[in-house]
Image 1 (cartoon, rainbow, N blue to C red):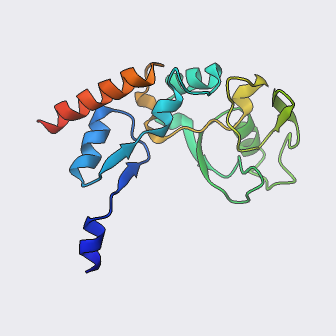
Image 2: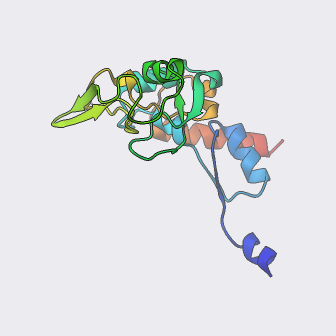
Amino acid sequence: KASDEAMRTPVIAAGGLVDGADIAAVLRLGASGAMLGTRFVASNESRAHQDYKNALVDAQAKDTVLTGCFDGGWPHAQHRVLRNSTFTSWEAEGCLPAGRRPGEGDLISARNDVTIIRYEDVPPDRDMSGDVLACCLYAGCGVGKIKSIEAAGVLVRGLWREALRDLST
């Protein structure tokens, strides 16, 4: 039966998960595991630019938007990102399509011999210079729960401890 097959298929929950309570909630719902993307962007080991990590710590859910602004040449590709100067300028001009967007083609950041132009879907990494906060700053809805930048191992142990505590209640 299809339902029996589905019950044997591992499901990894993702999207807006940030803390141990989120992990416990999806495990209770039947997920086999949880994927926490934004939480680990804001970790010591992440290659994300420090300004990007700091922006995640300072952000709230209301600071995110699901948008096609940063399409990187993929029309209509939607990403959840932090609102930034690129997005607000684009929004103020009426969310114009590729080829008509304000500042389109502007060099905003660089890494070695690679340039990043406005509206690319490339997030800023630690080797980039320039206006890194004008780049695509991916961020999930749970971003407001991120309060610090920590080592990944510390995060994993703390998250699992929180999840187990929540599951035992």
